[in-house]
Length: 393
Image (cartoon, rainbow, N blue to C red; front, top):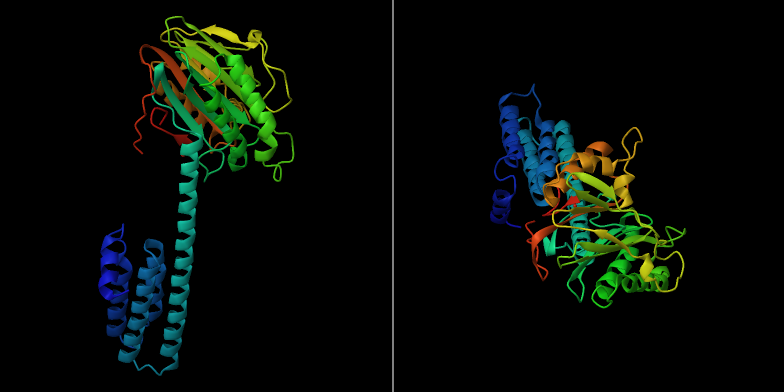
């Protein structure tokens, strides 16, 4: 790379000509002071600061340039203060050359690792967009807000899942689930349930038919996607499936397969919607087709909100070991709209934990509104715990 390209690279650096200029100013300053201070003062060894500081501010090219300039300055100091052949100056030049080369090499290694990490993050974000598609802000008569927090720092998605789909008739179907385990190892099982739900939501006329299809898909394919090498234990997925009609009839339906019960928020009162006959989690055992009497109907009128969540929320512990009391906290928050309610839950949950989450956690807040649009409206994307537009801050 020529001097002109190095100079352009310097000017285009995120730090501009500010912080990145400091090491080069130090080289000039140390050289000038050392030359004019006489033979009794030796500041040349301080030149090693320049490449070391540049490595923390810029890339390997500018780090190498700083090293070359530092060694050149050390040679100039030796010429002015006794010649290049003195043992002291020769030792300083050799040592500075070796240290500068080592710093530049380490900076190159770090840049390659940063590039690999950036690529891994990009892959994780792509996987999230493909598997855990962000739901629209509005689906039919429903307004939606959502939150996803992964237990692994560099992961955008883990073992918790949720999805929305329109049925063939005028209704919205919602699924939320939790794979046993968390993080990247659980993605395969999560993708299995998500794919089966999105395919079946449009095909099956009844909720029992849809849940039966989910169970069949999981039973047939779970062994192929489960991470049995790192987790040889039993694999299953808890799942809650709901159907919310568009028409004026306020009755919604749900089938609960071993998942934490949803919360119904109405006029600042919170009701836990326990299933009368909950089913076991998906993948535990093969079972016959689900009968209609396993459906739990509930009233969901205009202005009501549903809070759906995974056990990563209610099992989140404080430093003292206390579980997060979601229903109690939701009752204390102003539930003006899904975004506001989710914002309060998110902030309160992080305060309760006092650190990063130990398990994957997902939250959905759904409100029935007076007006609706019959088709999915794409949600704007203006930009992973991962907060997304329409969710908490």
